[in-house]
Image (cartoon, rainbow, N blue to C red):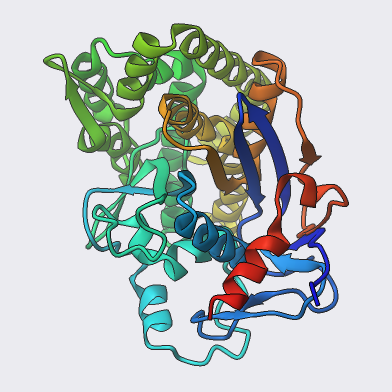
Amino acid sequence: MSWANIVSLTDVNSLYIYEISNKKFFFFGDQHGSKSAGGCIGQCDDFNYNFTAGQYYGTSCTSIGILLHNWFTYNNHHNIKTDFYLELGFTKEQDRAASKKYIDIIKDLREQNGHQFDNISWGQLISYVMAPCFIRTKTACPYYPNVHGHYIDIRQLDTSIISIYTDPFLLYDIYEYLINNIPQTINDLINLKNDFIVILSIIIDDYKEILDGVLQSDSFDDFIEKYTDMSTLFSKEIGTLYINKFANMTKISVIRNGKRMHRVAAELLKLRQQTPYIARLIEEFIYIKAKEYITEIKPYFDNDVNILNTLDKFAYLDNPPKGFLIEGGLAFLKIFQKYVYMLVPLSALSMDTYLLARMFLETQSTEIIVYAGSNHIEHYAQFFEEYLRIFNKIAVPSITDNRCLYIPDLPKYLPANMYREYVRNKK
C-alpha cells in the first residue's frame, strides 16, 4: 500500500519554488542554531541516530535532512542533473577544520540519543552528514555523478587548520574576541570605542567601494592595498582582525585575462559575457539592497557615536569607581552586538551575488536546490519575483523560530513520497 503524500516539512524555516523554461528552482531557508526547535509535532521521517539510514513512518511529514538524501539518491539513479548549493565556507582542500569534530562523531557512529546535535540546524548538519560532497574532490559523494554539491559561502575560506574570514561586513569573529577580552583600563575602553567607530565608519561610508572590490573585475589590487593600509587608524587588536578581512580576500581571488579579481567578480564577469541582461539585474539588485541596509543602520550609528563619545570625559580617571570598567565593557558589547546582527543582511550580499551568478551560468542541470539561511533565501525570492518577474509555485516565508512548514500543494512540485518510496524499495 502506498504511503501518504508528504505535505509537511520539519526542521526547515522557509521554502520557495520557481520554474524557468522547465528548470526548477527550490530555495530552502534555514534558521541556524537548532535542528528541531519549533518543528512539526508527531512522527516525521528522519535519519536514524547515527545517520546511516532513514527512519520512515509512512506519515505526511519528513525532515529536510532525509528528504534531501532520498531526493539526491533518486535523481542520481535516474540521471537527473541536479545542482545543490549549500551555505558553507569555500574550500580548496579535502578537510575542513571547522567540521572535523562533527564529522568524526558521525564517522564513529557514536549514539547521539537525540541530543548531540540539538544546537545545530540541518543547514549546518547536512555538510557533516554528506561531508564527501562538500570538499574539493567530490567523487566519493554517494550522489555522484548526477548530483553536484556546491559550497557557496564566499565570505569564509575553510582550510584543514583554521577558518579564514573574508567579508568586511561580517563581524561575528570580532564580537567573539571582545567577549573574551574585556577592557582592563579606561584607556583600553576608550581605544576600543574609537576602533569601533572607525570600523563602522568604513562600512557605512565606503560600503559601495567595498562592494565594488568584490563585484567588479577592475582594480582589485588597488582596492586591497587601500584598505590594508588603514591598519594605522587602529590602536587595538580588533583593528588587525578587521583589516585582515581585506587581506584575506586575496586568498579567494582568481586570475582572469591576466587580472586578479575577487571570485565573485569572476563569476559575474562570465555571466556578463554569457547573459549580460541577467548580470546587470543582479548588480542592480545587490547595490540597491546594500543602500537600503546602510540607510537603515546609519541613524542608529550616529546616535550611538554621540553616546559612546561621552566616555572621553572619563579619560583622566586613574582609579575609576568599582565596577565601572565591567559595566562600561558590557554596555559596549551590547552596542557592538546590535551592529553584528544589523549587518548580517548586508554581509549576505557577496554570497548572494556569487550564488545568483553561478545559478544562471549553470546550463546542464534541470533542478537547482539551494539550502541557506533564511535571509539569503528572501533575497533570492525577491530577485526572482521583482527583477525577473517569475512568480512562485510555492512560497512559505520565514517566521522566526518556526521549523514546521505545512504545504498542501507540495506534491505537485516536489514528489517527496516518490523519492521516499524509491529509497525504501531499493534496499
